Length: 434
Image (tube, rainbow, N blue to C red; front, top):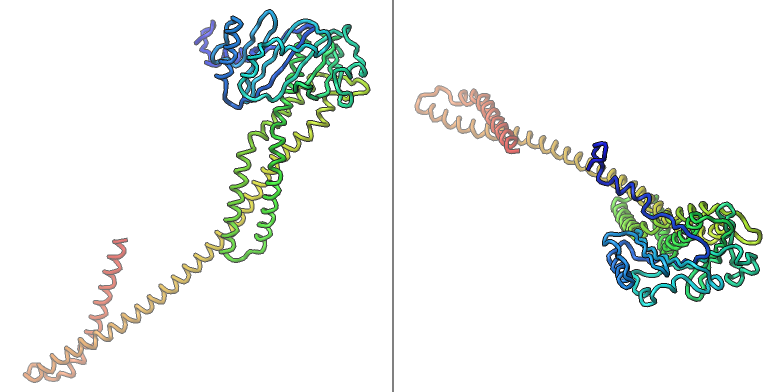
C-alpha cells in the first residue's frame, strides 16, 4: 500500500500510528462515580471476554465489539462501560455521572445488570470505587473523612497542581472494594480523566506486582536449601582428590543445577512481571505530582512503606536464583575442568604405557627375528651339509665340510634378507588396509 506521496508504506504503519490513540484518557466532570474491576485471565481468554461483552451489548441493543478487539466502550444513557484487554488481565471500568447522597453510598457498578457480573471470564483480582465530587459539596477535613475511611490508615495528597485532593486508606470495604475519594477544586475534564485513570492504574499494577509475593515467600525455603547444598558441595570440591569422587561431585552439581533451572523456569516470568509492574506503579505515582497534606501520608509514601518491601522481596528472590545459577555453573565448569585434566593425565599415562609396550614388543620382535635367522640358517646349513656329503661320496665334491662352511655366509645373508622382505610386505599390507 502506498500513501499520497507514492511511497510504499510498511504494513504495520497504520497500526502503529493508531496505537498511540487506542486508549485515550476519558473526559470526566464532577460529580462522577467510577467502579473498576481487574480480572486475572492469564494470556488467553480474549474470545470469552468478547462473547461476554457481546451478550451485554445484545441485551442493551448496542453494537457489539469486533471479534479481534482488545478494548471496547459500551455507552448507554445510564452508564459507560470500558473494557480493556491486557497481556494477562482485563479491566472493566464503569462510569456513572451524577451526584450521590454522599460518597460511596451509590456505586457505579450497581448500574450494571446484576446477572451479568458473575459471568465475567477470569478471577477477580482487584476492585475499587472512585467518587469524584466538587469541593463545595464535601468537607475535606481529616476528621470528616473518617466516615469513609479508617483514620489510622488514611493517606491523601493534593494532586494535579493542587487542582484536586485524593484520599484513600487502601483497605477493602465490606463488599471487597477499595475506595478513592477525589475532591475537585479546579480540575478541567481532561485533568480529571487523567487523574482518575492514574489512580485506577496504580491499584491495578499494584495488585499485579504483588502476585509473585506469595510465590517468593513459598520458594524462599527452597532457595535457601539449595544455597546450603551448594556450600556443602563447594567444601567437598576444595578437598576432593580422586577422579571417582570428582565425578560423583560433578553429578551432584548437575542435579542441583537442574533443580535451580526448574525453579527459574517456574518463577522467572512472575518475578520479571513484578519488576515491570512495580516500575509502572512508581511512574503513575510520580505522574500524580503529589503535594503533602499535613497529618497524613501521601500515596507515594504509603506505597514505599507497604509495597516497596514486598516488591524488593520478589526482585531479591529472582536475583538469588540468578546468582545461585551462576555459582553452580562456575563450580561445575571448574570441576569439569579438573575432571578433564585428570582424564587427560590418565590418557597420557596410558599412551606412555602403550608406547613402552610397543617399544618392548619391537625389541622382542627384533630379537626373535635374529634368533629366527640363526635357527633357519642352522637348518639350511644342515641341509646343505647333507647335500655336500652326498655329492662327496659320489665324487662330485672334493671336500664336503669346506663347501658347507663356505655356504654359511650365503645362507645367513639369504635368510636375513628373506625375513626382512616378508616383514616389509606385512607392514605394507597393514598400512594399505588401514
